[in-house]
Length: 259
Image (cartoon, rainbow, N blue to C red):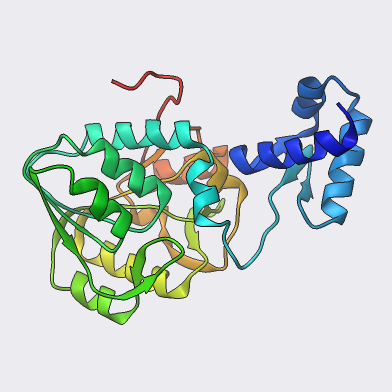
């Protein structure tokens, strides 16, 4: 494969998996390690990737990937995470689902649950759960963010403060080695913090790509989360912190068939 074809494919792999390694790419494309290092150097020089030891990651920044692009990233992993999360959501409870493609996947996995009251600031989640006649759906108010169907701002937070949820299911844009949940939109961060304050239990749904990304605004710590659903074991130091905090980590298998 020529360089002009290989480099766009490398970017696609990085977007799907969060990071790429020199050895894996060399094996995939049947080229030398030095060839891949040159490709990664070129992509880094162009601002498309950031070099890290042994490979590269998507560049850090202050803006997120487009929502439609995020929907297609790690779709199998998100579906597996959502199934694992939904399997442990009891029927007959109140819960909050916030903005994000992972929480949308959880909504799809909850379409056969009974007796739920779901409050959300995500129009997409509301539309998905409208298919479930056994689910009461409550939308917060707020300013509509057309890019992703999210409702954010003071009105959204004010609505949330009227409830006490049995469970909150939230996503994030990035998760660093200190265990901090990060996001790009300060208004959305304020809403997520209100959700956590008003919930008896909270879970995070985030695929492995979030370990390799960063974002500027802090939502909370994994220490404040009861269960973290993901598709790969966290880095060893983060896994140790989760054990110390009592945060349960559930690793879902994307290769397990949907039932």
